[in-house]
Length: 172
Image (cartoon, rainbow, N blue to C red; front, side, top):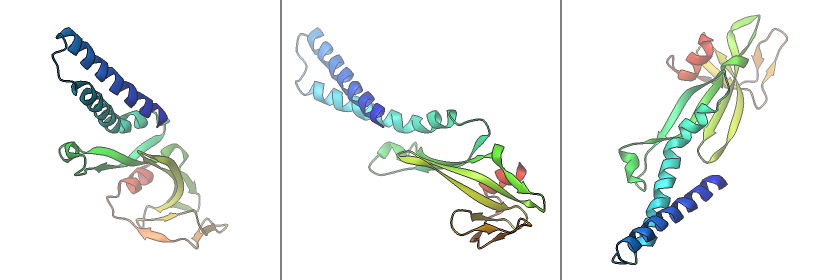
């Protein structure tokens, strides 16, 4: 975040410098308000560029075996260009390389899900998926396993058959 702030400030300085050079080249005929407006437009352009390239930059750095399951785009009236071109603000990824199964319950799988957000830290959560009953349970609070591999004290949630995370986990 700090690097993006520095980049945005330098983009503003660069655009103001270009406006100043253009003003000198034209014999100082341009209006005085051009330099601050150019600086502001340069900083806005840099900010918009960072918003739109965040997802690509982040997804390229994912380790092997981590696959993106869901992306969430955003639009907002305070960013009118997003009404035409929405940008990806967050996404969820599954670590397919570490999916675990119990030999007694092959239809159930535990996968690590990672949640990425534009201005948020990365969160990780282990989730149990039941590929036959189409449901999932978050394994953070109170869930425990019996010796036969069954899960007790879990809060199961039903999932639609076309759920992208369920598909990704159950195909692997």
